[in-house]
Length: 129
Image (spheres, helix red, strand yellow):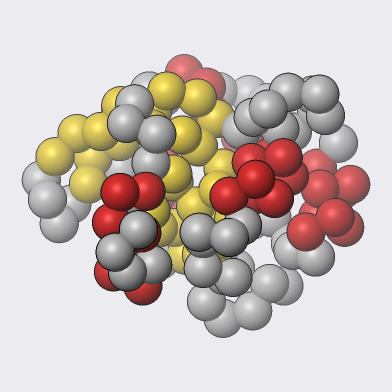
């Protein structure tokens, strides 16, 4: 299921993401943002298998592509409709960092809307509650 998305978006998902997605990722609904010392609720993780869903990962990406930086691929939606994204700042085939994308701030300055919260997906998992 995820291989098709990797081809569509020309990316390589982190191995930890692929392994944990079906097992228990959806159990984690809170994210600790270390810089703000704040807890953000995760409303939903993007779907990897329901192509008809508006929250199917490629559908979210292509719908929001005009406001996102090219290096960002959203994989979760917060309670305030911001995004948690893979941040492919070293190339789409390299291990991505994880970033918080503030939708509201993006209207003013897309660069200022991106906050890197983890160097990789494994570090991101440590921020989940």
